[in-house]
Image (tube, rainbow, N blue to C red):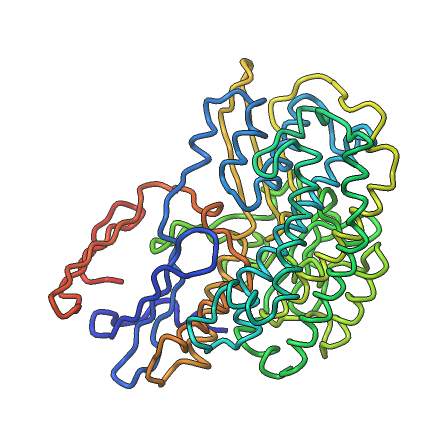
Length: 499
């Protein structure tokens, strides 16, 4: 692996290259490279430079506000936070996920599939397709969705309409495309009426057709240069995510499964309410984002990846026919049990997009979304843990409340945080294998952003405060040269000249 490139031995005498901000991702981050006199990379880091501290904001609020409040973490995946919080709040009112009414359970799943569909379409067509269609080192004027719409109008328009359909599913279930109010403690607040159901039904067959076309497109792109796509930014890792009891792909509720890089099972159907027994988070002084790892394996060997690639690697099958056929095709292209290619995140993501479209059609044909009880009640508890598979991976919400129903403790482990080590390792792989020793140009540096973008990171969701805020001050002369550097680490210590 490339851990040796995290920290250079003598950083003060090295040339510094910065990509700030990393573009076409949600939130703000930057990449720094330290190069020696021969342009050999000695250090490569992905820094998360914004501060949110949402866990602190939540404390002191009444618990019933949380499913609405936590959506403000993100404008891209608010439904994911809404549902993770709702699952935790269900437990605070005494309801376990398996005890929701059938109508409430199916409406939440429909809402969640709408989120998956719109988020995956947004990421692939709007953010990543320019790299994949024009090439990683293409002219910067081509690296946007407007260029895609001009040069590939059918693909671009389908991407826009796929995302719109996902947003319409969300609007029909929760009242708004962003920051709706569908889930409440113990259930949902409304059924779909016939008009809402028919409005979605009229387009769903076309959406499945376009989603199938998107899977065919990414397969064509990936396999057109298979050795390159299989090796670029590729690292070996553990993989973690939820799984159904029968081993099928699961987004809303299941047990935790983790496998190692050889496909050997580390955990299976583990109760996520005990996640603290298996996952810890490490803090490093140069990033606001933590580094989670499997406790049993330690910090060096226990880090893992989540998200589409992890889910497709971990599951035994997908329970919708077109997506299952696509999964089998995807797995067949690899020479070993697990697919490690970082760029294969795109392929796996579009298989999930297809699965979401098929699942929406299935649920729209289920009468339970238009009739039945919506809420159940039980005795109050003082702790709730909600876990779902968000578009970017496994999302943990953990709350404790007091006798007055006020939140006293909140812990969130968001998907991008779990991929923190993976993104850094992929950045180092690209820096070491593709950039080291070269005269760096802007198109060449885009390779680093391509590696990060494959994970579909949401850096806004992933930034929490731990202790004192790290701070770095730079004194730069008129020629742009750093003449002095002062760093305050998260433990409060100041160090001069250290990166």
